[in-house]
Amino acid sequence: MALMQETTTTTIKDYSIPEIDALRAINERVGRLTLGLSIVGSILSELPINPSRLLDTINRMPLRDIPWSSSSRESNPLRRNTLLLQLFEVCFSIFNHVDGPRSLANRMVQASGWFASAPIPTPLLALAASKIPEKGRRKKS
Image (tube, rainbow, N blue to C red):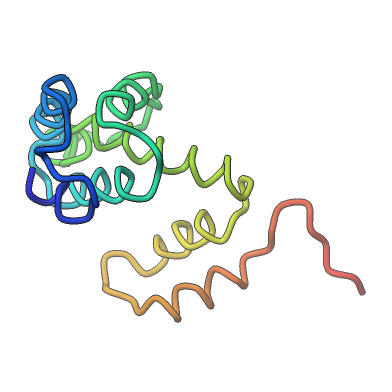
């Protein structure tokens, strides 16, 4: 829970018992993965949402039917951690709500797949994402 608390301006002491229980539930269900905990901490610090509402939002996100190869079905961490997939869906939903489906944030996620799993500097990622055309936007010839 320390990773979730690091990025929030609200301390654990400021939360009510049900909110602390929601944080514990998220902590357990995300499997204590650093990435998931960091995303939760960022959402809690950047958006006006409390932990119980975030947990409800995550639980309402539908799970997409992702085809997994039979060899990696059990070894894939995303397969074993459905809450993390739902958390990603919450993030994409936020991106879509704020800037539309072809926002720079969404295009950066798409471009990051081209470079996975190598670390990439943010300016290079932003440059690559800016080259992805926005949906419905046509170049004039």
